[in-house]
Image (cartoon, rainbow, N blue to C red; front, side, top):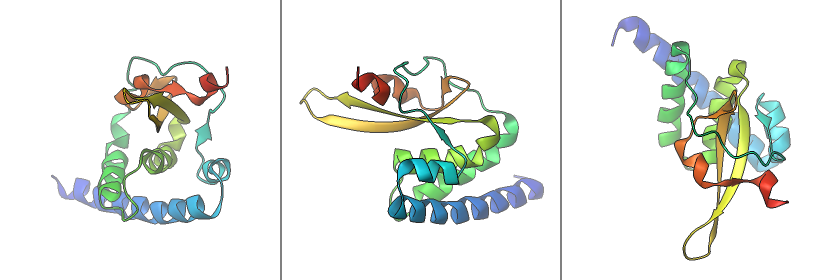
Length: 140
């Protein structure tokens, strides 16, 4: 890794860690829509459209920000939950106008689980999103 890339990654790590502290505080002190607005992440809890099958392709310039977010969340004391990951990545990629989606599924034992993911231009960043029914579909 070149010196320039190391410096860029160190800068992105510092930004991701600082942002994650603020996200954590916001999640604990306010609701999800307020947190999304605060960090520039759009959300769609009304659409019943299933997640796109094809994955989103991120521009090369976003690699350092995505890698830094992964590294920070891997060591985050509160855990690497899908919602925290989406909020941090959504904030760091906000120029691409990502949309936060939340879905649910029932496993073979009949228990529900929830998952959040980001979509950019209608394409998901999370390949496991297709296993979940979006919340907008739950009300129909």
